[in-house]
Image (cartoon, rainbow, N blue to C red):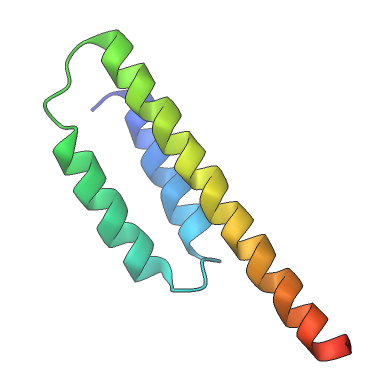
Length: 77
């Protein structure tokens, strides 16, 4: 396994802990995405897929922040 891919999977797991739907959903979706891209052998293609994965990790963090913001707003307004 490529080290960038392993690092990306760990990032998904860490980000999934705070995801509103739970770690199981994130793990299942990440695993499917990794299996779909398992055939990649070209270094450029692997880096492109990892960049796309990092984008999704940032989206997971943004979803968590939005969920947190909305719950605080609901409580105090």
